[in-house]
Image (spheres, rainbow, N blue to C red):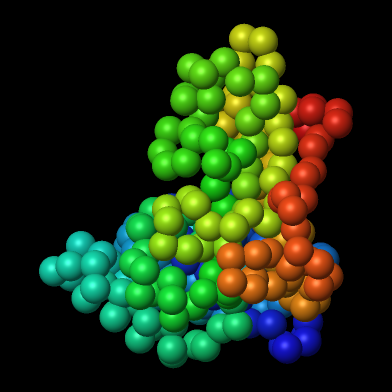
Length: 222
């Protein structure tokens, strides 16, 4: 696979802000890839309109219309097959995928999570970080495995927790970090620099002993 041929499918459930960051990076020539379709499990997801406005094909596979997770994933797989992709990107996709789904796409399935994993896996990460009194929070990109938010870590963006921080304020800064982190990791994959071997992340052919770390040294609100 070369950078010019990388085809990406993005799965969303909501506003699609990470999708927009990915599309912006592609448009700016920073990410040599093409989003071939955007799929939402929620019919009203705002990210669908965002994708359509960018000329990206969209589809809805509403999980509520299926009797169980297996039936939902069969429909999802059928939609993915309509526009085959080299990489599947979960961007605010609020459905836990099964071990079977992961096995079919292992090594080409990425997710972004709003915490410094393994800390605060799951939901309500910002409130939990503030309640725990941590000095740093942030975002993580990882390969997806059957363990929820537990796949091999690729990179993290660290965000200082400020005195007097609110959940909304911290969430906004972490979201900006996500928008910088995800396109960078996708660019590594598009360039053929990133791979998963067994449970080991390889970057430029070398095993990562720890996720690559980024931080906003200025930590401003721009």
